Image (cartoon, rainbow, N blue to C red):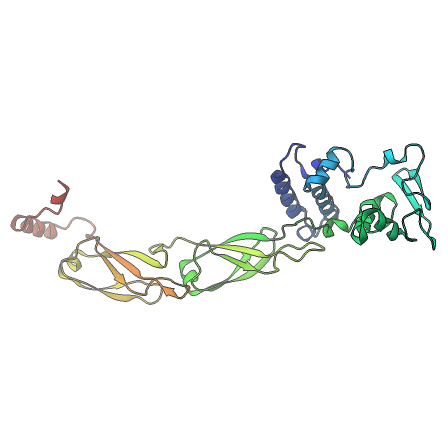
Length: 334
């Protein structure tokens, strides 16, 4: 097992937040579900998880930095065996091997070296306090010949693993208003069909329970889809309201008339009064977006648009009209 700082790629002075961030990035990158064709992915993921068990726990990190535990979280017993004694008392023997210390325990009907039981789990229970202590000791020492559960503890140790998957999805304004079903590709390569509810707003998050990443010993994470609404080519969103600029002709502004106005549904007719100035805004009630039981409105701002090119007849008419009816719409500006 390599140095946990090296495994997570952080400095020994790294903060808890830096360690957590490094662990999450590596865990997602090397998760077995995302690397099904890589035979070494599971071992790499386990190594990352073990390193985080040590560095992600303040007390264990201090123990490792002081040399009290090794890179796999195993206690270092060298000092306990100085002088040839055994820390386990009667009934236990130990010998040093190439991989560390190996132990054998003899079972009897009476006590086991003063530990009050006859079996391996009884001894560990007395030493470390209950079945949880025995399981932790068995997992921690599994690689040194003490038996127990070998490496399953990576996933059962209670270390928080972020299995949620975040993604963004862009939808059109029409899809947001009416609802839709779209396919999204997640960062881990998985593809899902996502139902977009009618009335969704930009920034809203859709949660898909149990569709996220998985890890042994943990419930599956969720998929969190953040919805963004793509800019529309003429509608602008203002909360539940919509706004649109509507071009009208000079004669429609002067003489009035009915003009067709687009909506998210069918187009409707808007009556333009005579002598309507450019920039005047009309309100079409209930023609905006519907969300949470409330419907917005559509605000239509008219803009007078002159014909393209020069029109001699129009220019002559305006010159005549200017002479007969002069006025200054900017008099309030000084």
